[in-house]
Image (cartoon, rainbow, N blue to C red; front, side, top):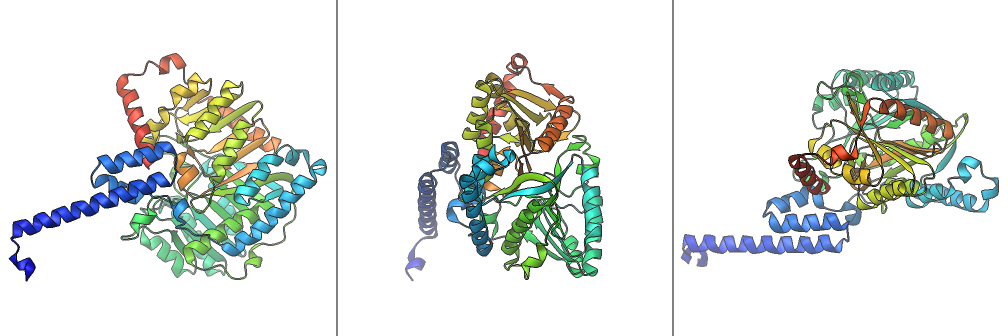
Length: 492
């Protein structure tokens, strides 16, 4: 009865005031939370400014992209049982590294501290008996993958950020359907945002054939608000628990045929045999438990006894918002700060945090030959302009910057001192280091590292080396665009 006595205009003024007050309190509470989370100061400042200066829009951006799930533990501890088992095994390896240094292989002894870092922050087991094949183009990589899929007898496990329903995507789909009908255990995870354009019929056809298919963190209202910004960017294939693949390629025709605007896509995948395949399998199992809500039964059957190939030590490291540490970023940082001769990096997106940027500049200033290969053109405009904004200070520190022409470099590789190499899904950017679920192989082998360096040098022939003087003469319009992109990019 009281509401009926209030004039309509007065009622709406009261409602508007109430909504404004709730909004102000909400934004103030979020600002306090952002500050209390003790993030990178740049990110914290940007979010505080966005929330304070962009009414409604700032709040919407924060809800979609700003929440820090590493602190909130949205993802919990995926695969707790597996992690406990890995923790025990990694503890045993730590004891062995520290107590038996005199008897370690030189390959392991030289990188004992680096190996210890990944055992401590990621429980990334050191595997010593492996075989690696480098696959440098999509035709080569997918021919190899398809050959292994066709030969599968027991299980096929695949995880990709992007799965496309194009020629290569449909070829793989029909192959998986045939294998599932033949009794092979086929499981596929695809990222729901990365595979945004994948038609529902793609997964439905696979399921109808007997395969198990799950999207990673589906983005649907109202769940969108907590899931849009944290994506599974890994690329993993494991066949029969004996052969594995990881690297930078997604399932899409452009990795084979190139792109009409960017030209051929350059990328790197690894084909693995040996103990490291079991590490990849364990990573897939952990992600599967998360998306399926249940563990895979009779897991031991997926870890067959392997005939040891040659001696090639490596660790398979992961990172993501389910970890307390930025594992892969820390591994990069350690390797960069302990380099003795040279560091070669190829990455499609270069948006480093302050720690990585300082590490690279410090290495160059101390006399290390640091070379970074970036694409001359990119598929992501904001990231492209933001990456360019770092070039001037890299050049000033003595870092050699190369921009690839006639194609798009999508490889994510780093080689250090011709003895240690990183290959995986993680870009040299804040998103890969802090937000996405990523995977990388850290290879402690001179032969493999030198092969990667030789390919890097070949690609350098297709690059333009950036001249400091010419770069500093860029028009102010260009430098302003770069500066704006650099300000915006950490928010996303």
